[in-house]
Image 1: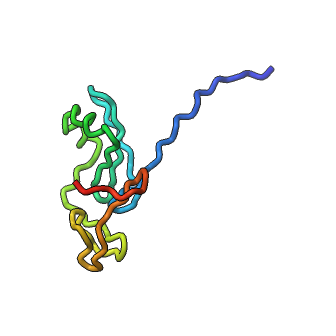
Image 2: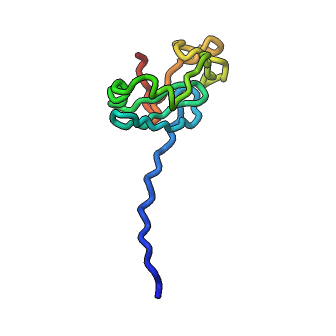
Image 3: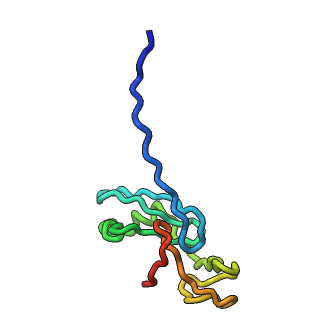
Length: 117
């Protein structure tokens, strides 16, 4: 006689988005605490954090210490490479100083050009 074992369905895999600044796959960090749970995408290379729509409001309900307990704060500022020539490029520069390439960033979810704010 064959025994039938119930197996839980596999958990859905979450896509690891590319960092819009340096293009490496961002890591996932889950913020639970006493507030509403939140899964954030963050780049271990440049220190950037990606927020999906509405996540900033959820994050605001958490004490800052909860965030920095799961995502390491960078002490130094990282200048990622220009997407055209590879020269170090300040994250806030409008264009690359070496090749004049416009410092536009593409959204990692829809690949559209993002607005600077």
